[in-house]
Amino acid sequence: MAVDIKGMKTWSKLAKNKRRPSEYEIVTTNLQTRNRHRDQAYELSPSPDLAMNEWYRKNVFDSPLQHDDWEEFRDPDQLVYRVYTRTQDVQESYVDGLLDDHNNIAHDSGLQAEWLDVLEHIYTPRRYLQSALQMGAAYLLQIAPASTITAAAGFQEGDEFRWLSRIAYRTRELQMSHPDRGFATLEREHWEQDEALQGLRELMEMVLVTYDWGEAFVALNLIAKPAADETLRELGTAARHFGDHLLALLVDNQMRDCERSRRWSAAVVEFCADGGDNKAVINGWIDKWMPLATKAISGYCAALPESDGIADAALGRVRAYHRSLVISI
Image 1 (cartoon, rainbow, N blue to C red):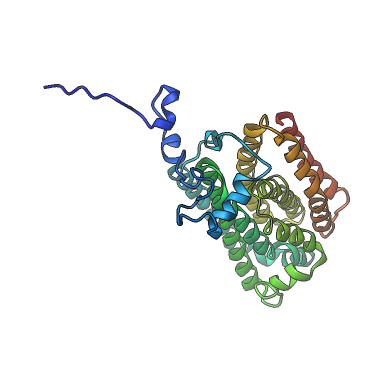
Image 2 (image 1 turned 45 degrees about the vertical axis):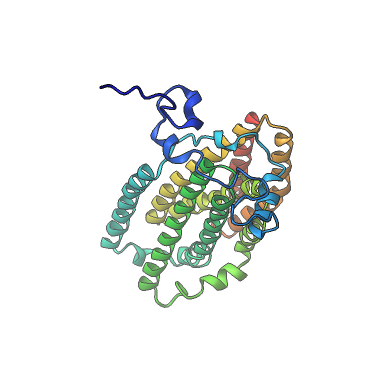
């Protein structure tokens, strides 16, 4: 006997779409509980004075960046974990191939002394920068007001850890080829003391103590990460000039991840642009943080060989990215 089944035929949150939800929607949307109760975000205590509840209320619910339903945000790449891991596995195989091929021709032994100075002082210490970028993405993951934003930030965190690991790997390879230099021993000293890195270090330290979710998003994804990425791009260009094609190709591969971060970040800005004072809020934060980014880019680029004009070029690309956002907001 046939049974007449009535009621919801899809997830209630997605029912208005009048179609079967995509894999991305099923595994990514409306997964958080902490947005249901303003005074009890983490549902761990009946008391609104619980520190975690208070933190989330202050830095998310009361953020100047507002939207009626953050869960409606969609990653333009509609990335899910299955696709992310499969895609990055292919990219990691590519990187492994680059490393093996260049090891087979003793690539590191043939690097010029002037370029080794650059690698020692402003490339291998970037693993500290990558660690800070990863921590920033992890904070966004934790505090984001929607599970779709959490997912995008989570994949960004994975990207940062990927490149932190690769820089550490290259550091060890360079140490093995040039044991008389400071590879794998002096990176922290360079990160904390070399003038070229102090702008980036200051910028990231300020980002990591920015707790309002909206400002943290703008400071990290619209300012600090683009600034770090553009210094990396200039490093890759310089690498080609000095015959370090391995680093240049690694930079090219890393920029694929950077572009994905910019896509979902731009989508967040576009998504909330029409709400309340969001346009003015975002532009205000960009204006607030750009001086630190300018200092970071200028300081780093000045340490690169043949540095004339490259800081202006890098800053120009960051500003062009911001202009593309202004069209939306």
